[in-house]
Length: 120
Image (cartoon, rainbow, N blue to C red):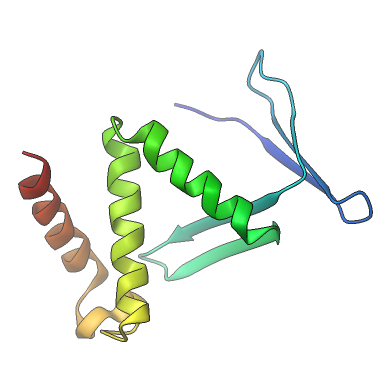
């Protein structure tokens, strides 16, 4: 079981962001760019979003995460699912969690099957 604490310190006057966690031996990372945190529970239909700073930097970081993590199946699935949801909203197909009136679990299962076909 993994359990650790993440601390985010945003200084609006200095325009800086410090992120640290209590795993050892990791040091705090300091940023002058952007910060974006998303947490959710699809079954409970609840989410948390916090963003601060430069969206261009956040976009660059997301692109780097795809490039660096492409060989990791979880990162690949995460970005494909994320992209699928964004596409649903942008093209106005469905309405978020209640995509075309379908249960979220059914949608996730369908995407998982589609993913298997793409990568195997």
